[in-house]
Length: 225
Image (tube, rainbow, N blue to C red; front, side, top):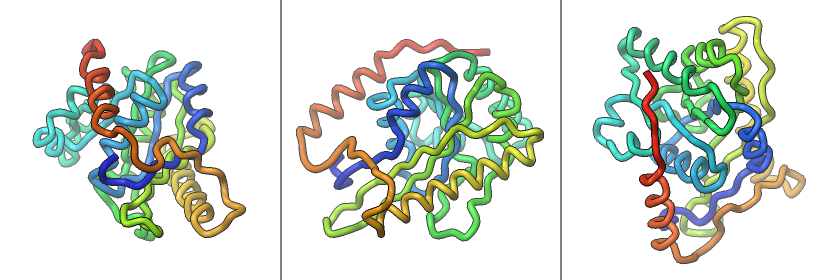
């Protein structure tokens, strides 16, 4: 909250309602280091779900805090470890109220990149987790008239079940690109989609952050094998 002017989200209520009925796999672009903290805040404070996220093992080792709030590591250069992480993610997606957030790019990529370049893991998770609903999401950090950037998050409609992993992966990437375009339109046109502010302007930031972190750390967790 100290770093950003506002956080604005499209279709947050729809995803919150969806998560009460089905396990949810969120696939999104990965554009900045801040993405992980943003996901923690959205999932715990706004969506109120039992949330997990796949994270590069080297980043998780240097930032072990994320392991306390649901992140699990994957070595992107080790196919065997990648397969293990995919199976683990699919095991998590077995009941309503549980959400797994995946960044299929596997690394931070500028939002201006011409191709998102999704890896195949997210499509494989969707194939194994038959009960899960796949939701695309786009994240963008935008400077305007204020000295600090605002964060825009756009959730898309749940994706249809694909006949194979290749089609699923292409569909996920296209859907995230569509949500990035939705943000672009909202930034330049008054006729764009509404992005509701979940944080907008100053408030008692220290106490709010402390309360959320205590709630997260106190939440019981059960390791799946």
